[in-house]
Length: 254
Image (tube, rainbow, N blue to C red; front, side, top):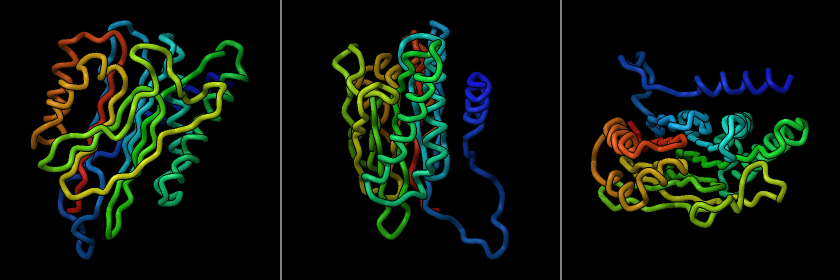
């Protein structure tokens, strides 16, 4: 039963991507609305052990990296994201602390699966999620657990990290979804202007590129697709052993 549920979750996550539509709007419909226009992908590591999962929706974007270096890594990531999607954080309040409910739901899902199945004693995942609050004063709320990263790239200005890593160098996680200790996510918010960009990366990207080079690649007025291609080219050249996931979202209002 557990295997069936996990397989179903992973299958659902594989199609949770919102893609843009081409063509004219129907008569009488508004010309546009505030949203996140996003692209993303996972560069598969050479060790052949899937560990990353991600979801892209119009106002919710999230990525997770299952730790441990085993075939169970992707299971932990999928369980975490399945719980986040089910919690619907884009509809569950507008305060920064309201995102805590979604991270705690992910924590319970991964921890419960680990406790119920002796074959999965150490399911642990990172989690990075962003939610767009579209209104008169648009802003982005975020939650972060682990050693991934969320970056804010204001239009025409230098990219800045929004989060800090929850590990020392290449050491074990100090905070993780599914750990036996209580979860204390890093929560925050940042104001958005049209043209601003937000980027989520998992640990594999940071290891492959390093923070200084990644910051250089995020600088510039290229499209999300072009930016993703640049990052992918350099990740490929580094030949990472583990998965490396990049999600790039532009804030648009038309």
